[in-house]
Image 1 (cartoon, helix red, strand yellow):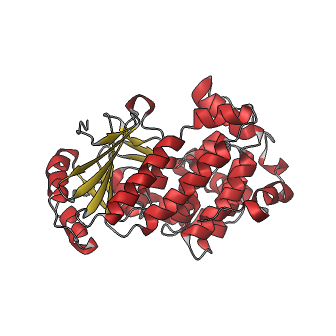
Image 2: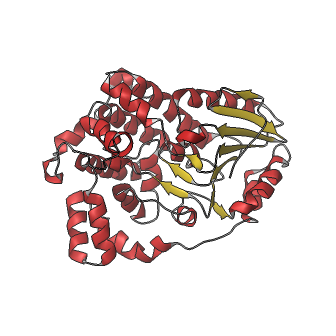
Length: 358
């Protein structure tokens, strides 16, 4: 739903305002589905400095301008252009974005993203680590990076690996979308509301007293809860059984052997993706499950993302999906069996003095 606030600060792509006791962050690139840029990350960081220090601010709201969604992810077209030219936008962007992801996870005041419409990739990095995550019947939530010759980053391998059973593995390797109700079911959101109720709930949030406790904010959200159907739950037993394996080849073979319509469809979806991206994503997912903190995962993802930035699959995946839109990427290597463990090991190599620091 359209948000048309009056800003006290704006650089065009980001609007920062105060409404009652709430600090509001509005991603303001509706024509680009509010794709996140480096400048937007920096504005959010400065705004959080102010909101955290101001005792009159009880909560932070995150919203997306326009009718289509909160945020479709990072501005990957610009990242692709920089990668093709040998530029350094990728390392600079991911350094600051990942630090922001960690900060949101640790933010001391209730942080409530309105995850209406499309929320993907970098949008999950902003919303998924927040304390009070709100979806709707219009939410379309996903981390589809394996479709782009990439992997779920921005702490995605932490969030996905901590979902119940193996459902996070399923969403990682297929890149499939989930509804608002499914996002609550897998732990990627806290409450689903009806879109029509957002203006009333939003007003109530902005009227909370300074110092409002996190539990009080959650109780308020739950008074507007509007549960919906969770189709993926019907397949959880199959997903938990098949996706528990630690090789993509084994998962694909088991899906083929199962033979059900869901298994065959899932197998075909996986085989469309980048073989290198699939194997890297699964390795990172398993490591993420064993990690003790989000920061540890972000440091590992940072190593991987710098390597991915230099590979042809990253450029090719974005070309096929968003530039030429032919949906016919030429992956390198083209087959799962051609992606060797040493190829994936390169993505995990320590960076020494260049490690991500918080």
